[in-house]
Image (tube, rainbow, N blue to C red; front, side, top):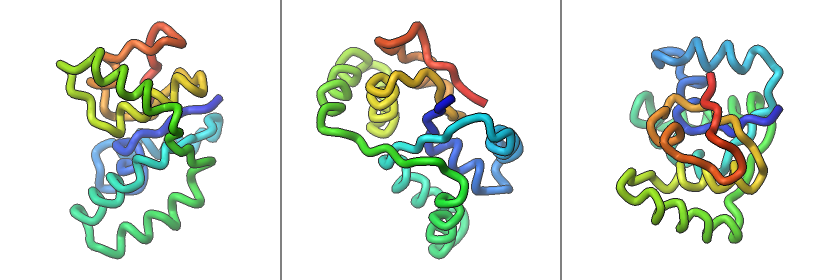
Length: 137
């Protein structure tokens, strides 16, 4: 089954000093899930890793990323209208752009599972294609 991966999950997976690293690692070692990463999460992950470690760590992450992640999903032009709708509907929640993109991609692809440690935004959002998103791990 396919799971969309958020930046918080990717950072935890890569950074063995992250408090969520063990949970992220055991989830991926299980091997049952196809991990789909929206391309919009990559700049944020790189930024966090550069701040936590050093400049070269962001490049080492991309090697790691190529090994661990099944596929990369772009935001499509058709997603932009839905992103705008979600942002307007949930404007008091102030979702960030990356989360909005993940929500729109999940709806477009019919994916109901998100690997994230950002429970607030994804737990609050009610998608069109299912009653709620299942937040993992």
